[in-house]
Image (tube, rainbow, N blue to C red):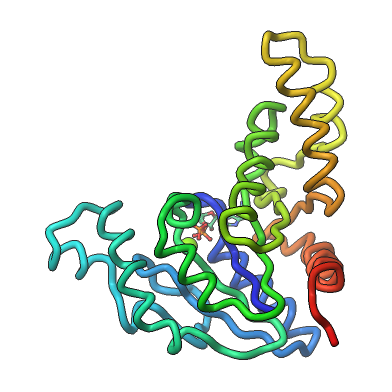
Length: 233
Ligand SMILES: Nc1nc2c(ncn2[C@@H]2O[C@H](COP(=O)(O)OP(=O)(O)O)[C@@H](O)[C@H]2O)c(=O)[nH]1
Ligand SMILES: [Mg+2]
């Protein structure tokens, strides 16, 4: 199973790859970690590392680009090395850069995911709990997850990180949405219908990389998604 760990900068993707791979190893699962962030060295043992082939700081210098252009160019360059980044394992965790435009807009991000995918590829869309504790932000995050799923053509689930800092009450947020009386109330309400049709059926899980909680929920969710989408013959 290939698992793409996606989400905005600082939401805890690299920490998740480190902590969740340790959790899976404790279960004696065959787990591999791959760093796909050309701008950051991995904080875990990487079985493959994009930075051995492409480094954003070097690309920026070579092509005279800033950080965003440099990262996009790095992803384009990374495609040439896709065979070096493709590893086998029961659980292959791909750590990715936080610049969401790579996956939402650029051709390179989409192409790289396609080249690294196999029959069963899933996405985990991570978002910092403290940033989504109001109805509008929570719904926006869920919708972004749907956009990532559509653009990459893989099923994705939402994972709320840093629950040690902020413990989100998802049911309460959904209730608040229906009580909303602003001019956006109708949009929010319609979005809830959409939400029920999409992500909530796959649950939203809460984790903490720091206190190492919620990993069994992620594990169950991945296996559920695998059974729903995977060709397990
Ligand atoms: N409190 C708390 N901090 C976390 C958690 N996960 C990550 N962090 C911190 O958030 C910051 C960004 O984490 P990182 O894994 O580098 O995020 P990335 O940019 O998405 O890869 C670091 O300082 C981490 O120590 C968590 O579950 N709880
Ligand atoms: Mg990172």
